[in-house]
Image 1 (spheres, one colour):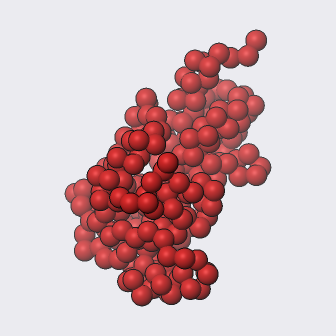
Image 2 (cartoon, rainbow over the protein chains, first blue to last red):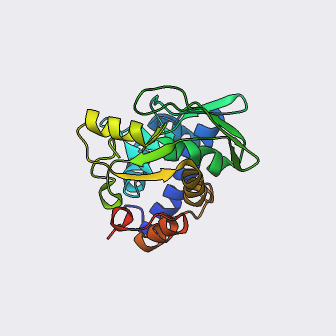
Length: 153
Length: 71
């Protein structure tokens, strides 16, 4: 018998939180196998759960079924490293780089650089505020098309 | 979504990648948007924002107009 939509929802909730907990603790987005082990579940169940969660766009998968993004975190290295204390993560874009301290409600350092010339533009978040941060954020794609061209967005 | 030193650098990037100019926001608006977007992400009962909620969030940060419409 296949699980009911309600039990899918409960599983997906647990999976989503498990992915975030692993990522926050380790600095890396978990593999499917790691998520399955954390939930004492099967790889197949986790793959199905990730497919459902990716419909929200908060999670996005790679071609091999592993997580690519668990927003605001990136599973692959990017130009947006974020450090909180001794821990660090990669964010998907500048919005997500700001999203990590916003989500964790912690002071943070973002090693950003100009998208044009790559000169450093470090950002610091302290006490819930930006410290002497300068710059302009550019979003290339109109909001309704963000997920049609997520790389250029 | 990239960060740029100035409007001039945004224009240069758009020329380089042959993209038309998109939407811009200040870093302060970006921080406010990030707080509104991600502030509740660790709650167990989190649900993605509806189209209406997302547009209201953009508006709260001052992001209005055709570029920010989701419908």
